[in-house]
Length: 165
Image (cartoon, rainbow, N blue to C red; front, top):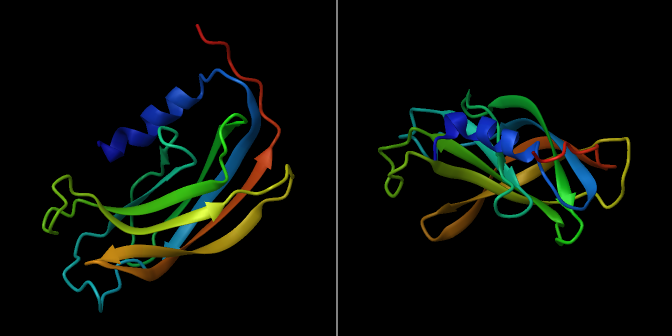
């Protein structure tokens, strides 16, 4: 996965969608805190992070890469349609560290440093629902809570979609 070009490629795909959509999910990823705790992970020297998010496989979007230890800031917004035939109830979020070639088991240089499953808003609204969501990560065979992600989201009526050519 080329994470540097990942978001541009996915965004252009998602602007030309077809189908029957009931809502648009609009969300903003602001920042994360407490990633790669220095006491737990003293060997981590390269701290470049991105956030990958999706509601169903194949609908994933990615922020730009940010340097920040242990609190990167993105302030990036996304909007995509939710298919009413799918039972989308959660936004899945993974914070990944890039260029981690020295860490065992990461031949592609990507390490998931935190993930969350965030319930989608239940109603269409003009107000963003802001939140601080706990992140978990696998350390060995244990699932640990480590860090948080700050974001907002809302459901909106869908925008008119361009016709496929």
